[in-house]
Image (cartoon, rainbow, N blue to C red; front, top):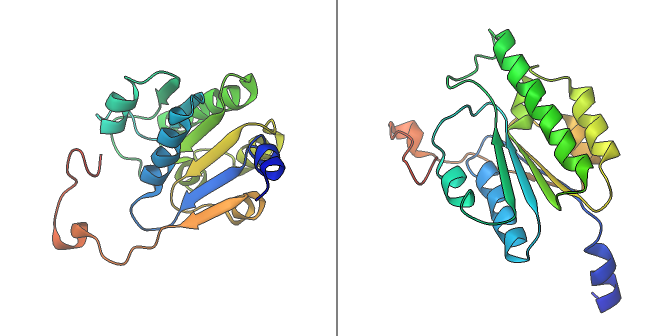
Length: 182
């Protein structure tokens, strides 16, 4: 890659999607976040459907400069067969805050964590998510995580990685561990 190509491509923000049934979608996004922060970029992370659960990344990233973290959702898990109005309201708030972050000019990277699940479970209108992607300012890098990425989002994204579950300790009864799974 020539120096000129490298410089011009670094000013265009891409749309990245981390999806699939395997572990590591949020972790992959957070790896990009750490890299961006190492280059003094401004980052906003919006957590969908995560409530006030004590996720380790919120505590550690919250200590760093240039990062804003906002979390939405009830403390309990969302039942996709019985979605509550409260769950929809929280997801809509998260999307609105995410839209504001993307459009504000205040951030170089915006992560919409678990938005794919929120859309798949109809907490959000997928068309609103697609509209946000299409209207994103060119310099903003946008990452969407979560299982069940809509095929229309996959099609318009610049980078899509699917995590595939091959083996997981949950299958052997190992519960989520602080510092590793949350």
